[in-house]
View 1 (cartoon, helix red, strand yellow):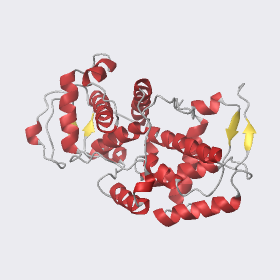
View 2 (tube, rainbow, N blue to C red):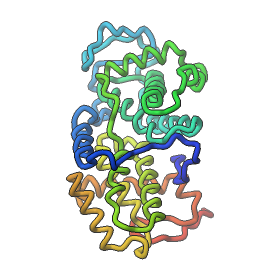
View 3 (cartoon, helix red, strand yellow):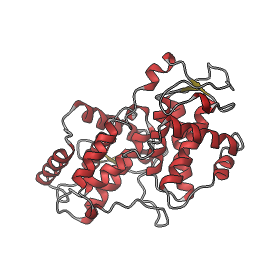
View 4 (spheres, rainbow, N blue to C red):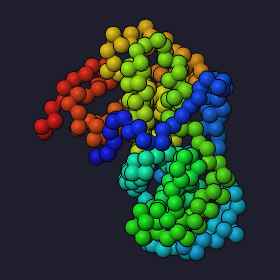
Length: 316
């Protein structure tokens, strides 16, 4: 079960700040979309993992054999090749990352950044489970170091790995990731897009706006957890999350006319289409993930995609 909830973060959490008023956010959205279509795009590496010849491991790193692109590099294998990674491994490590940021009071968006590093790395290299765990831990360390106000010491992550990886392991993997990703470490996230699209909301109650943004971020976090969204652009994930977030809101809070106007405004600045197959499929996938989440089990009310709020029987 996906251990995510829609609860509001405590005030002590290092929250994300977007000063929309000081930038031309339309131009910013365009730049972000160019990034997600190019250097931060990730392919479906799970389908072609068996075809790749490059293998990374956690010891005997030879950086001299690696360029800043995708030139093969040689490693000493630590584990058997048949101990392969899968989508469950990714979900497990993603849950671990969320626990880390929650424990240290960092914003949850950092997990999406870390998983972007990890997915793009796996898009270039195969790895065993041990190396995968190390790459995920190091990706989380990089994201916190670059984007969090309070840094997390590398020794702390070594401790969190229960001694499986040393400081030297994490340092070596950090160098490897930086060069493998060609130092492209600022991916546009779905949360970025959600906050930008949030500024386009029409005049509605502040409580309704807050509900939309909280639910949107919740659905976006569900997407981070699932491999299905690895190949999706962050803008597509954000738009899908927002559309789902609006479901269940009473008409008195957000009229159909204002909803339609808002959807059109987002489409105008993003070139997205809420009727596209990609968005429709992404929305359905998010609802499926929601039904498996702790949020679904913990609350008596279920937000249904049909726009109704129905009592859920949790006794079964």
